Amino acid sequence: SSFVNWGQFFETDKRVLINLANWCQDNNKFIHIAGRTNNIKENEFFNDVLKTYKCWKFFPKINFVSSYSLINKAQCTVSICSTLGVEALARGFRVIFISRKPELKLKSSSFGWPNKFSEEGFFWTNLKEPESTNKLLSNVTNCSDVVWKKETKPFLTKLMHYDYGNKNFKKIINQLLK
Image 1 (cartoon, rainbow, N blue to C red):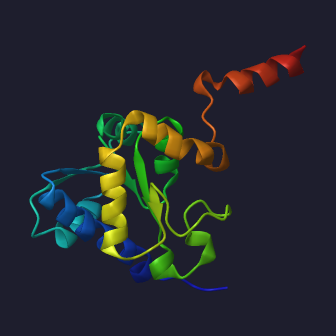
Image 2: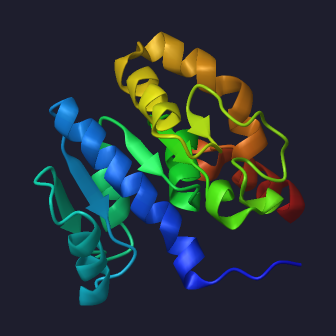
């Protein structure tokens, strides 16, 4: 088994942030960063990485729904393979997934693991090169809703099924209570 230190882990965040900021500057877009916490250290991390860019704003986590509220308003969400990103995809939102695999060198850090997907797809990449991420950003921000649904549908049930209102769960509970 391999050990991963914090420096390796956050190297992906730095790489993705810089690439995303460059793309946003070139394409007149703005980044809203959903914080994991409301700790000042998290904001300092983003300030340090993005100090030369003006195209971003950090939103600390205020409560359970604050990150969801930010995603609900986004044209596109970029996720470093977080559960929040997978939830947003299952809810039909446009999400790009960038894995930690180039830095961590672990099979389990590939997009969609334990599923075995290709290294790169319409809305994900396990590759480090900025060109790969830039292609995804163009794909996802420029495609029609029809194309988005067609490209994501085959992956949704493999990643996370969204059952609006928990209909299936309620059905099972009701059957058990009979």
